[in-house]
Image (cartoon, rainbow, N blue to C red; front, top):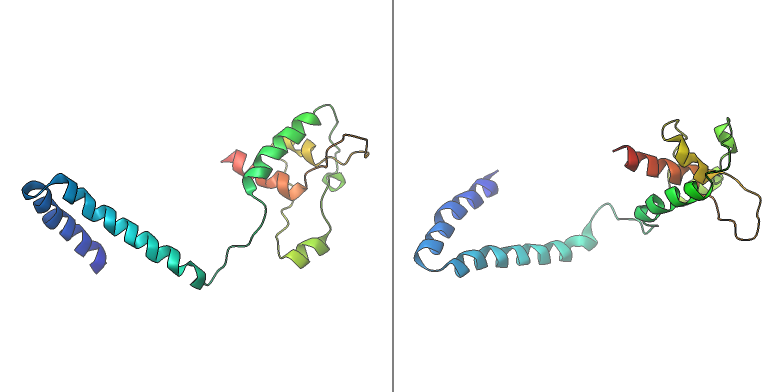
Length: 141
């Protein structure tokens, strides 16, 4: 709290004085240098984070892929049983440490992206139910 109030006090008294009596460029230059300095400190400290970011696929890729595959499979009829949709084995989720997301009934038209198909030449690999549910979650926002 002290640093927040100290920064606000410095900004209202010190920077206003500098802008009015010296120059606007110096008044804007001081916060810019402070921001650059804080970003450098932030990036230097990233290796010491306790919780590391896992290298994985980009969620935006799934967000784009799911509607495209669902549109390509638009003529296929959805099964009544969601267990017939494509999902990876539980062993995959245990070994990689990823979480499996279970099927939900909202935005059912996106479920067509997880339809298992006969492996014809030129057929797309289906998305997993976890990928589809991630896209549903973002779409529902």
